Image: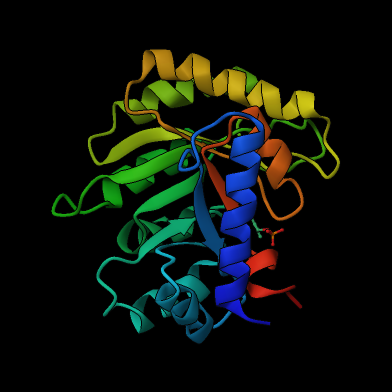
Amino acid sequence: MNIKDNLTQIQQQIAIACQNTERAPNAVQLLAVSKTKSAEMVMQAYQAGQRHFGENYVQEAVDKVSQLSHLSDICWHFIGPIQSNKTRLIAENFAWVHSVDRIKIATRLNDQRSAQDTPLNICLQVNISGEQAKSGATLDELNALAAYVNNCQHLTLRGLMAIPQKQAPISVFNHMHQLFTDLKKSYPTIDTLSMGMTNDMDAAIAAGSTMVRIGTAIFGSRD
Ligand SMILES: *Cc1c(COP(=O)(O)O)cnc(C)c1O
């Protein structure tokens, strides 16, 4: 397995998916999901030109962030479920958080983000596939959560994130894009729809995703 070749191949697949749906080739950003993978593997991806990395587990991520702190332009995204006792480490070590799904977590991240740092970029996770998913704001909660985050001084509302169920119909992806488009009308800082993983990347891009979160296709399967 060669991380550099995998990145090249994924970038090509993104470009083709954009072309197929008449979107600009740079309309979709690649987030490399490095959870369970070593700092050395992150370094290989970095050397191949990758800058944005996604992590799910706070302690594991913080170790990698400190091992790679000499890379001044690396950008860390937290994409996993958030326990409230972990928000400080997230606020201190990440540039983006994709998985904010309740006001309590937004409050803590805002309070714990240093005023010296740039505001933390926030995507709201939406529970788009219904009861089976554990995390994500419901559609009923979404507007109030967006308004709240938009008012937080140390947070910037950037968009929405979703993890559609396996084999979700295209209507689910389109629904997310509709929510994104609607919310963008109220909040001009919104520019990111974080949707699409190794197995549903093409569907997500066809529906208008602007950031895909890819782990397996770059770093290989996880144990
Ligand atoms: C693990 C994970 C990914 C990457 O999944 P792959 O199928 O390995 O591409 C993307 N998003 C989230 C939220 C994840 O937890």
